Length: 518
Image (cartoon, rainbow, N blue to C red; front, side):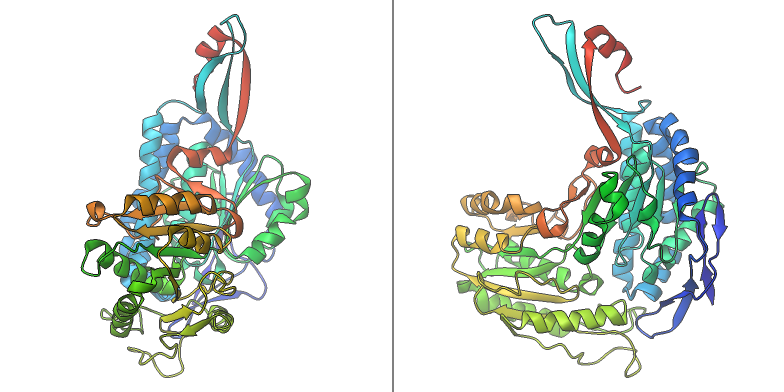
């Protein structure tokens, strides 16, 4: 059995004591163990700050981008190895595993290219020089320089490759060293990636470290120049916000938490149109991809009452054709939930949703392809229908992190649709499917303040768009309210989360000559 090690302070570390177990969620087989007992977490962070930080800050954007390109190339070269680990440890089908691994290396490649574009600069200039008085020689500008701390990245279990890559890409390119901690339950992919990076000698000392296993006291050692980026549940996020050092030192904290994402079908859409076909395909994909264990999955489906029956019929047809079982089998299209605790959480969440919604499709797997009876953490997709869409308290409050979505019938009035969207308390993404520009515009105006991203589907782009749950590095990822209030990616915007913005006021020729980002 494999024993996972952390790579910290420039060397491999194997913890003592009782280890955590990593399972195959389809069979219950123990695949690996890991422990961090005995690790000096304060020393880990200090090594990154004092050894890795100065090195990265001295490098240009192009040089930092070259590090990201090396990471991307390695992940792509070992893609099949990583996909196999994602299938075994994450319960992913091959398609779902590819979604994670390919998202990781492609995001790194995007930011590598951005580094090349930024060239031989070391920091960012924000906007133009502005005249501050009557005399044009008295001027000001803003610059972004790398913080002199460490970026602490705490990632979720559902995207063990893409999750660490998207955070690392922006931090490293900005000039901050990274200590990344993958979720223990699915750490095999991230741990293997780290092994590959170390074997290839990609990173200068102290610039990139990985902790495999529990690290509950990690935030006891952060300071005012550090950045903490977390993806996970709102309860954990709340505890992090209340942490002593985070509060005491005003540590920059970037959080992505719960999200009741939604899809809105416009009343103008015909059931034989490209937009309707796209809507059905996207809803089904977002319900079932990664077994619904995605922060961007569609949880609420807003359908005009006039279209409710055909939508219900078409979704149920797709659900009933779905093959669930051993994700390593070629014909299986959805695997298990990742763990026993996640399985219990989904069942509890369904009980809560049924306070305000009726089940359209059941939960018991009809049959499990290639799975021994009683094994694995399986559910089939569950479709519900709200009794009162605007006042469906549980539906607009409880995120069930699994293959579960709820139909919310509505009148077709864009103001009503916006009100239902806002009832979710803030989210990562909502998608609008309509060719009616006035309708789309009204829903955008009525809901944009509650979502980090709005996906606008139209017949003119129906054949070229990715599903709304695909996080693209060019666009910001995050959302207000219950979604955590954080923000990642967004091209060059992602770098600024790891940089300090400083206003410079002085003699214009000095600003022009000496503070251009070099």
